[in-house]
Length: 566
Image (cartoon, rainbow, N blue to C red; front, side, top):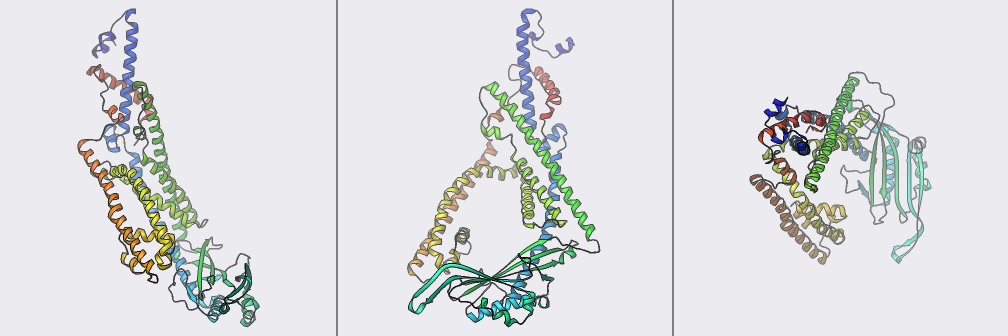
């Protein structure tokens, strides 16, 4: 054993004997132990910041997490495509039924909506005929409709039509004399027409006092009814059919009292579980296969979630070791940039994606089993999770220097871009409010704040410029001149100045990253620590080998729980 120690050629003080050498030996051994801890920490840090390929070459450690992410990309994308094709059938069924309802219940519907409303009437006779037409079509629905439709119960658990009218409480009006006497309180009167009533002579309910409309007091007439339908096209895709309840509303809007009554049609389709399905064939077996596939996706995402969470926890532990060591040795704290290096933001993105995929897959399984019908929430969860999964692929491309430029440029330019957008956004909002209040009455693209913001954003991207200039109404010369000044100043300011500065910020960050890649990045405290030689000038080459041996032994033992899988 003594020969083994001498073979390592340790310093003289390590072989000295006698009580006078005791304190010196203990101090030297304490210093040696500190060097061992420092070298172990440095080795753990180097291993932590390796990519999966470097870890495999260093310790033959199989990159399970990278393989799991690649498998998850394939499975999540496949799941999304299958759900998208199924959801496409649902959307098509709803839209086609809405178009069919408009042709069935709106008299004179041309097939194209006039604006936000479907059609309009301009005479009292046309208004009465449109109301009576909708009621008559509802009564004859079974003989007219080509779809799988039936009558449904409304909120009062009654089958039939509900007609309501809103009007001012009372009043008189003489436009020729410019006199008006009206009570602004609004009254709502409703009548329910069931199938039995509609089966009688139509003149009986048409001659009712309810349908005697005083148009100068009338605000709107609302006809509401519920219909039920079954979507049979899913059978061709070997899926169980869905049962729908269509809540249809026809509104005759006379609030403007301008001589034009706008007719709105709204159909809200809700999917419900079919009460009794008896379908023979292989549909049931196909549904079971899809459910098994979704369950497997959940297992894969759960495994990815556990591994990424474990890596973040172990990274925080390693950061604590480094912070304690740095504070003990150098008597100062580590900068925030180095502390954030231990928290892998890609893992956080993967965890969020896994959580959304698991929740979305559970909802998809419930929808497939016809226990839930919330397609919209499921689509948002699965779509966003798939987006995050594919964005996460950039992390593996970043291991190559040629592809890493994009990530580093985005990371360097993001703070500057956000500050620049905050300043430019103030100018953008100013133009939005100004255009809405001035040009709103004279241009259809400036009628409300939402369309104004969309129109200005299109102008920034060079879209539809001529149409925006040409569609301004020339009823007021002052407004026309203001519109030219407004549009020319906005386009010049945002395209020639603000957009150019925006591109310049990103270009400057790109040039900085390219220069760093050629000349080297500025070294931080963490990088300097990793570059330091563990032995420094006080340890000899053989002593460094001895420390490395001890370090490897300790890491394989008590510190093994800090070895991270990247």
